[in-house]
Image 1 (tube, each protein chain N blue to C red):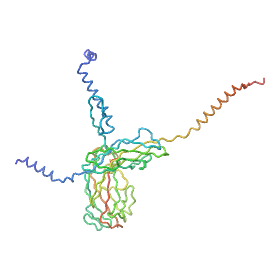
Image 2: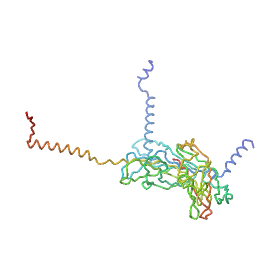
Image 3: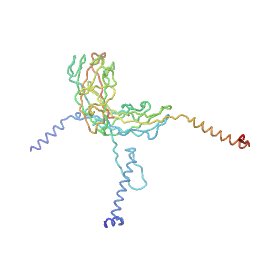
Image 4: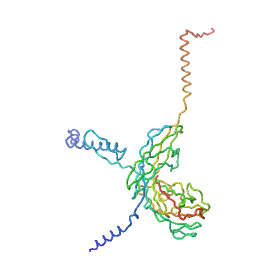
Length: 187
Length: 209
């Protein structure tokens, strides 16, 4: 056997001697584009958002769960998890497979105006053997929307318009009744 | 100069027509791709005549991948520890290494720990010292407390915080695509445990945010 053949055979033997589990990995990916509403949200309504993409970036079949949880600080009000529903919330993916998850947000009536923010977290965990630590790989996509501030009722404009209407009405009545006001100087 | 004006004014040839048709075909494909991108995998809309083209849209992903599916605490020392068994008071153990990779688009990699739950469902050991967790009783964890660090010595808490191994110059920022970090974990156990289970489990999560 030539030397190159011996080297090749040895390399293959080493390669196949590695247990498959030694290279197993887990991973989670989500779409990198934040989920937003194209128009300002209105309190008391429910909105269906664009899909959340979840991808298995690991090398083994894994179970995934999706939930809403704010991770980052910063400005903006936190969207309560109870406002957000995802479907399906739990599913299984083969390596490299992608699943779309529907996202809805229900904004209760009376919600204060402002910018609202949370994260949609997709995660997978290993089932650690006794004595081992379970590892989790997760990825989060932002969910953002604005609720416009409710403007106060325009009482001032109504009062001004009402005053002008009254003056015009009085003038019209005075003309119809023939009343004339004549101003004369004492001289 | 003359030849340029001649080129501008000449009649379109058959070859030019093919070029225009090819460009039109490209534009049509791009528009079709844009329409089809809303729901990958969904059937393309039926058209009255002619052929249809299928275009693949690649969605940008934020992703974190861990190089192993299992990580065990071993090499326990301190207190009554031996081998892979944690002893009291305040024994400590270390794990092997795991490679954490920011496998997708640039993103901030966060890390979070959790309380350790006994196998009998009794009183958990609270993770102490890190973000969102209670302070440890002293320099070392107290009763029913434990601390966990990812080397070289960053304390873990139950709140997800920036993984310092991905920070640049101590500043938390976006990890670049394919940036990876080899990490290992170390825990310090409690002074004593109310629960007498022989096995406690916990988990550590890395998050691409």
